[in-house]
Amino acid sequence: MKKILSLFFCLLCTLLVSAQIRGNEIRVMVSPDRADWKYGLNEKCTFTVRVLKAQNLLPGVTVDYELGPEMYPTETKTGVVLKDGKLTLKGTMKTPGFLRCKVKAHVDGRTYEGLATAAYAPEELRPVSQLPDDFLKFWETTLANARQTPLNPTITLLPERCTETSNVYEVSFQTKAWGGRMFGILSVPKAEGTYPALLRVPGAGVRPYNGDTYLAPGKVIVLEVGIHGIPVTMQQSVYDNLAAGALNGYWNFCRDNRDQNYYNRVIVGALRAVDFICSLPQFNGKALGVTGSSQGGALSVITAALDSRVTFFGAVHPALCDHEAFLKKRAGGWPHYYYQAEPTDKELKALRYYDTANFARCLKATGWFSWGYNDEVCPPTSMYAAYNAVTAPKELHLYLETGHYWYQEQWEEWQDWLRKQLGL
Image 1 (spheres, rainbow, N blue to C red):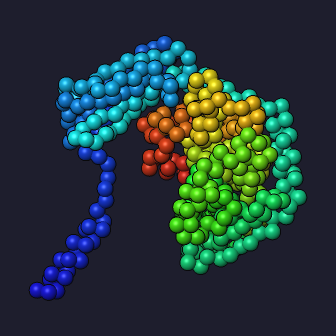
Image 2 (image 1 turned 30 degrees about the horizontal axis):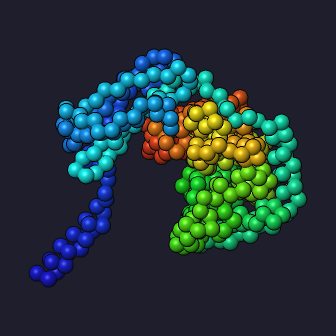
Image 3 (image 1 turned 30 degrees about the vertical axis):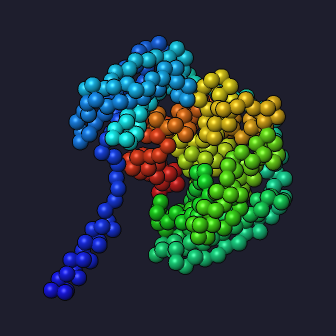
């Protein structure tokens, strides 16, 4: 009996451990009246709002809603009672952009949100941000000066992370004089030979990294970097403390200084990462890509724009796009520098050198882009403005309903495209 009880207890514990919280019982569905969510200028879009419980309309719900261009709603109402759990809202736009309907439903003391975003002539969007006359010259000079400093790389094997097909290392290298070091995780195929390479650049935040041994095991060199000049294999608590302390809001550091801006060292570091990859004897000197999402999407565009050795890039919901759009009351990209306050003249001029839209104008490498219309961190208006400025070969893969995340299908399509570009 004791053995039976013990076995029962173990099975119960296993079930409890494997159980996960997933989703909400109440869902707020906001649906445009066209399947592609796309409209011509001045055409009406009808949003149908439904509040569901167990996939059935929930009557008597109180909702608040906003309707209008993303980040700048023109119609706002609170305390609207949905007698049958349903509401219809209409809107339009006269200029290119995105019309967003965002709804909050209040049920049993809890608040649930839903939104949808309709596109109006997005192919006509262009960057508001100005391109400085010396933009490329500034970055060419910055990188030439940085490359006078030797990489002086360190490469430390991480036996516990190695796989049957790849050796995994923690690496670091010098970025520029007084610029500190950049750290990352490098995976290299064990078999003798030369291989294509991929640089993975990170989204915003402060965190450790595991490296990539999954894209194409034993067939590709992958370097995954952090941007903060600190080792990437420490305990999580170290990064949490830095994120809450010394690195809190790092994207604002020296944002009014072209030469001291926090992203100056970051961008230089990404380009020195390309230098490091090209120095590896296992690199075949042919296919070399860079990829990332959000901040990493921006860094992918930037790195590809500044280094002709990069043959392709993949950018998912890229950040830092079209900062000056806010000055026209149009949604700009994360971190929304001018959303709440007007910039000083010094800040305005300095940040033009750190705008993804300006780097997009300089691209020559092949690019793969993907995002969703419901992204509230990197508004689609800002991303389209940068994308439309690209004259190099490009493709855009939309997953309309996604916000600042990706679907499984989107992830798989992204990785498949990278493998194809790597010749795998």
